[in-house]
Image (cartoon, rainbow, N blue to C red; front, side):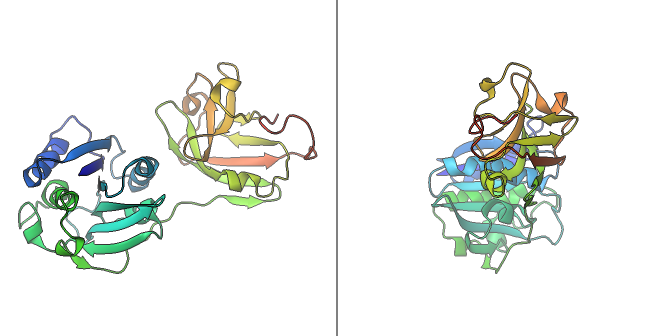
Length: 278
């Protein structure tokens, strides 16, 4: 009976506690895991990115509650869904604003609109706090075993939103920074397959922010302190980092910044390319 919470509420107000209190009133045995309450305000894509990194570590049937809801009180739908990620079935509860397709892609197998006020905390939900009055109680009910079809009416598809895709060709890869973590590592939308698709064993340089990164490594510590590098992090995406430093600040790279990987011309059998390219 695990419920994860991802919100843009912060912890300086009582909003998160109010949501948890409402859910505990439905099911006192719930286990809460706070993924993040520091999502930038109304930033749906950031919420989906942060949660997507966490979901694979959770057991099957975890309920993932997402309340980043710039459309609260409008005609946007409230949703609950069943989806699969990394071979496990999970539940989603949140607004119909793109976060579900960003999180689950095409893996949504059941979807309902939360249009039954008798399942909410109060029949007349607040116009500004559906996290407490609608989403929280539904998440608690799902975690307690209430069938999805008891909570809403089946609908066909959520509002569409898509991750930006990199451009790849024989010259290199063009992408962007999706996320900057608390260490200052700049995580791009470039996968290993994107990087290697046309690379043919060649070295590469990465152009981003105010610098050209010429070192590609397996770990941060393979470079000297203060040196910039690229590597593939735990997300499976190409990162721009500075060993023992904050790459975003030091290299003037922000979320959304363009990233260009340009291949060199060294033959594929040249030495030293397996880990590091200069």
